Image (cartoon, rainbow, N blue to C red; front, side, top):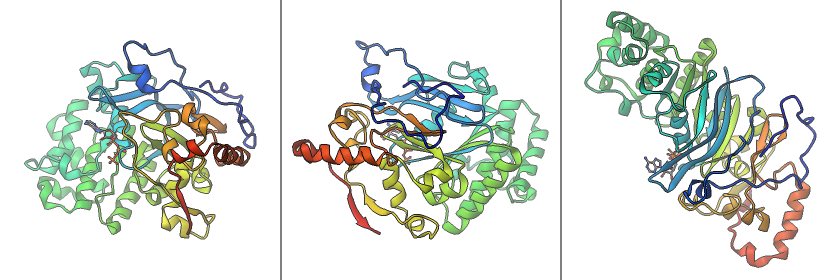
Length: 394
Ligand SMILES: Nc1ncnc2c1ncn2[C@@H]1O[C@H](COP(=O)(O)OP(=O)(O)OP(=O)(O)O)[C@@H](O)[C@H]1O
């Protein structure tokens, strides 16, 4: 899709008319050798108010030649922001996070970091870039070598990426242990001597060792006890503010996301289906999938500051990414789907400043949804092909 040029944005109250619809080629078609990829424009070259530190354009990741886990993603992450990537298991969050750091090879697209195209960097170039781009993993134990001291573990990326001497790297490791709320005297211990929360602090210290500007944190607290989660979340929040870190925070826990994120991107079946500022998103999601995700969080529904929402139960499983549905990928589970959604792929379009949605019938278009309801009644055969969500009053 083509987005209006920078500075010519709509007034926030302006709604994009329903006739303003787009078709974008699906990844499956675009990948086939007999269908060379058409030259494509990024869907939303402008979606942040500050200049992006990192941007992805047309980024796709395919496993085994057929599973397109990430499909033509365009994304910008502004300096200093924490962008949360949310969605149910298997929608491609981790793959996208890893691909942004080039830990996962992209099958198409480019990644630009601090003005440099890192998509095609050599090994040596990538090693230098890695100093600025680090990852915090969900399972710190799995990523910490059990035979090494944590001092050596934290020092390792510093030595690899910045070429620092052993003594200096170990000194920095001890400083970092203090910085993440542990003690410098723990540097000689092995990972198994620490609790889960402490190990995650070590994982964070290691990620910070090379003084990166950008971090991908992949479900950094989901393996921790709830009481420890808050401490680690607070630590990450403090560090991002103090170090002016830019972060992509991957999580399926919207309660945590509301606490941590400045912006939210929702993924469904390899695509981004909504991007919004955190407060806008929680005040009123636009995409039916986002509505379902938010309505499923009891803590949010119970919050007196939240508009009481209907509980929307998503029926059915995430479709197989090797054979995504035609048209809108969400159409098999969407209550609002019409014939249009079965045939025409919605583009990710900007509906108000900084707010993007990939849906023919977003929540801010009640008239469109009303027309969609009429359309569905007119065509009961197609409608039976759609498993509508059950709506219960919470
Ligand atoms: N190494 C791999 N080989 C083949 N398929 C993979 C591989 N890694 C992920 N996938 C598939 O890619 C899709 C996206 O997976 P991914 O782990 O990125 O999703 P996710 O949203 O992060 O899920 P989770 O929260 O469970 O980690 C899934 O269908 C998954 O089965």
